[in-house]
Length: 262
Image (tube, rainbow, N blue to C red; front, side, top):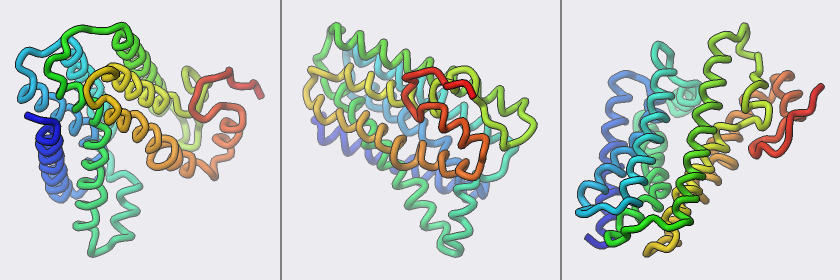
């Protein structure tokens, strides 16, 4: 199977999952299930590619499929568990009202197909690694890549856990969490996410088409910083005086300094 065939097979798999997820969202009348689906795009694709492509898997390929499965399942379970017993996310409710009678088709295109395409592009590094059938050893820079991924995974997991515990005990939705890893930056979970994808790309360095895999960390970094990650959350709290005070004293993404005491 050549690289183009790998791209085609992966793309068809992701689009099929997108359509299934969309159909399921219509049944339960909750399009925010698309958020849960994000991690599953990667898990299913990584496992599928590993099984159909790899005959004698290298340690690099085995490590990466394990990395993607652990990351994707944690992400989907984290979002899915938080959704239990709750109504549709406010973003999707707004779109439902905005699109009106056209919501069904717009939801398919934007919430599922488009998101699936983004997942396909972010998977570039993983597809590069699975394509390189004869890659056997674990080079020193690949060890560094694994370490960077592990750091990012732990950083994101811990920050998500800290925020989750805070939300269970806070008295008001206007309260802002300023402890744990959140005192070093306003979005430590996103910082951990970005680290993970740069780590995966570093693992792919030296393999055939590794330069194509650079799309993975660049795209995920761009989406988080400029599109659907930080901007949406910052906009949501722009009228929250407590959050604005917190924002002035705390770096946005990189944990470069301690929060100044006020």
